[in-house]
Structure formats: C-alpha cells, structure tokens
Image (cartoon, rainbow, N blue to C red; front, side):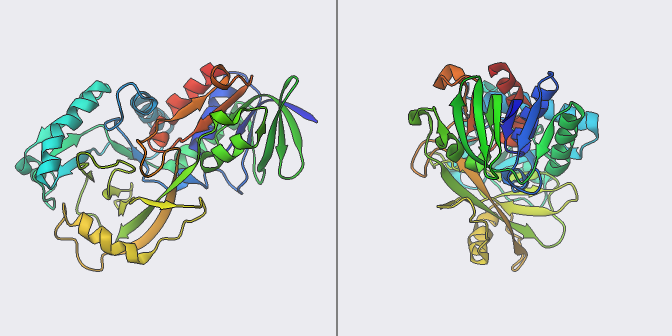
Length: 368
C-alpha cells in the first residue's frame, strides 16, 4: 500500500486550488480525478462570472469567501496573464416589486463588505446600456468574467511546479479511516494511505462522504441537483456588461434568474435557469425550454429577435438544499466538526465557488 501525505479528490477549480495551496506549503499532494482531464465537471459548465459578493447572507461562508476570493482571483489572473475582465454588471428591475427591492440589495452587499454598488435611474442605466429596458438598476463595477479553463490550467501548473501531481482516470471507490491516516481505495483497485484527504468531488462529494467508513452519516447531507440550461445568442451581444434580473422579493433563490453574460470574445449567453433533476449526468439541453427564455429576457431586452437563441450547454449545481428549503451555505467540514482526523469534506460548493476558490483553499489549509 502506497503512502501519500495528502490526497485531494476532484480536479475541478476547487480541488486544484486546494491542492496547489497544500503543495506550496511543502505538502506531498496527489489529486485523484476520475475523468480524462481536469475541470470536466461543474467547473467547465458555468457562467465564468467573478461575483462581487452581493446576494449572500452576511457572515456566511459564501459571502466571506466570495468577497475575499474576488480580489485574490483578480490579482492572480493579472499576475499570471489569465484572460479576465472587470466588466461590471447591472442588476435590473422590470417590475415595481423588483424596483422596491433594489435598495435592500445594496444594503445586503454593504453588510458583506461590498461598498461600490450604486443605484441607477432608468435613464442612467439605459445610458450605460442603450439596448436595455428597465425601471431602475444597481451597478456592480466589481463583477467580472474569467477564462475558467485558463485559470484551472494555471492552478494545475502551480501544483505540479510545487511537486504535486494529478492522476486522471482515477475514481475513488471508498475511504476508510485507519490507523495512521485514511485509506483511499480507487475504482481501479489501488489503495493509498493518506495523512490528509480533502473531498472536493463536487457533484459526487456527498456520495464520496457516504462511502467513508468511520464517518458518521449524520454529517452527510442529501445531495440535490439543480440543472442550469444556457442558450447562446446568435450574433454579437448588444451589451458590454452582464445583465442580471433583480430577484423578486420572497421568491426562492435557487439561482439568480435568466441573466445575460458575455465571454471574453464578446459572445453572449443567457441562463442558467433552474431545473431540478434526479441525476448529475442529466446534461442535455431541451430546445423547448428556449421559449421561456425569450419571455424572461424580453423583460429587460425587448428587442431580442425571434430565433436568436440557440441551445447551448447545461451545468448542474451541487446543492445540499432542495427546491423548498432555504438556500444552504457552503459546508466545509473538518476534523473539528466530524471527528475524523485528516479528513475535510467540501459539500454544496456551488456558485460562488469559482470566485471563492483561492480563499476557500486558504480556509482548507488552515483546517488541516
């Protein structure tokens, strides 16, 4: 049985960031990834947005790690030449109830340490984005976009330069608490003994936790899968900033509405919506869902042409709260919580996980 200092399960943006942080502190690190490349899961199927930290409850991990992670991520991308843009976004109100909620959004953001939001009149908002139609808006200049694939390649490069490695085609079948560490049994039959194991398996994180002999089941929440479908816009975007609909007061916030994001090449996409599914493998986009997208988008962009939306791609949010539950916070469980020495479970790491990756990695390093 081979002995390894630290094993990280999952080579998405969170797993790579955690492994990098551990390796740069002198730990021997091996990342186990069941796919044939890093970043094939949720990390490659999102909006690639750098969030400001606006919507999350004050004091929550999502709020704190997003605000810390945002600035760490901007600095890292600038230092490494990773494609990104601090393009900003508008949160737009198209109904009186949304309009009345805008000051509350600004107040919640300030409680999280986001001080640069500004309320806009309809005229100010439409002067910034002439194609827009709204009753009012909030401008978030700190929101941006990033090339998530370039980011993950850079994190992997840092990890490998520090002596770590990524083992592909290596799924984890079981974990067993053992004398001297945690046994990691792979689907191929290999057995490793690790002093530290970080479960960053994303959509499979709860399943991996359930397959951990020696971990009490009370610490493993139910996994829920909220699919998000994206539709792409044919032609160039008429917007230079991201456009998000303001949340309806009292509405369950499983997602942030059908928003418009742009990539670094100027291509626009709309989404994600929220479609609760039973399987994390349900990644097909039903073109028929595009009809609902037209209605949602035309609330803030009435000139959206018929036939302009094409089925794009889908991602799955790894949630630990269901369709009728309050939105759950990130769940970072270390030995202080569950009592298993050397084990950290990262559960329900959905948005703003990409933005938070570097700050979250620092939090995990402190736990182990």
